[in-house]
Image (cartoon, rainbow, N blue to C red; front, top):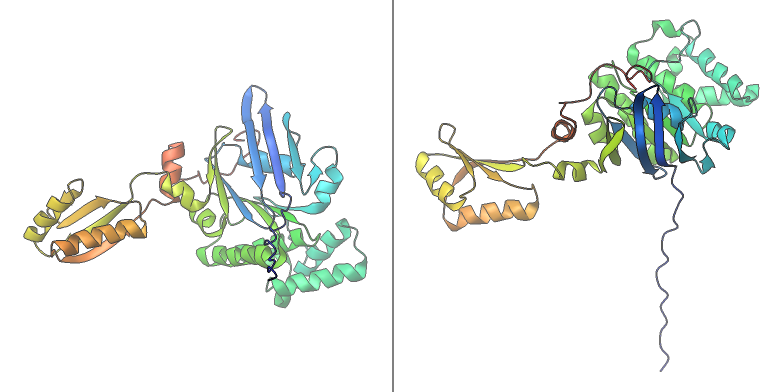
Length: 334
């Protein structure tokens, strides 16, 4: 009898991180802005850096994009050493800052062709990329209009399109949707998702909108006073914060009283006839609550699950309700 040989499954090939940093430090005079932060960002993902105004978000972006030098630390971007191979880093990245780089006196197409010239593309290739990007960002119909006639959302789309002319592998988006209305912001979210899903681009995102990080980021880090104080997926960060609960409402006071006897640690509200039962939001926990109610034949009128959101995470970790609306200035606010 011949034994059948089965080969072991091949492990997925590991890819190099898009960005790594160890012990990144930066000071302005006596003010310590970054106090030895470490980063490890996977290729083809969205990484969001949150923090209150003055935490060091913009300074981090400016260092990683070679705009300013760090005082200390080892950094690799797109597999290249940040300082020893700075030109190679610049050729692999794109930066869309807090303030638009769009030239108001030029048309949308002219802005893109200007970026093509700056990237030393030949005229034919520059025109091809500009045409494709205008179509991709739904700007083809306004290609001949000057940028000063554009809405805020159109300008941000053009600004991001200009960043893509150089075909970057890593894009730094520093507060990309600040000042946009909700509809334009969601349009930008779809564009960002497409860049990652379709093109495999890595996005390094700083934002003051916690919902934005929750919607887009594969991993989130919270920066405060120059230190990374938490990092993980949105769900992992939410699970670190207490306050999750199941809220059960009853039809009458007797049902509330009976249920309160079952869940001794629940908070009772006599006026609204509700119990607030501590919960981690998991399916097993919810099932246990329902089973306990069914076992005692107590009828609940409604049940809702409440879990901490990123606002709660931000408030708990930094003592602020959300990042300040003011933008980071690297020398004044860092």
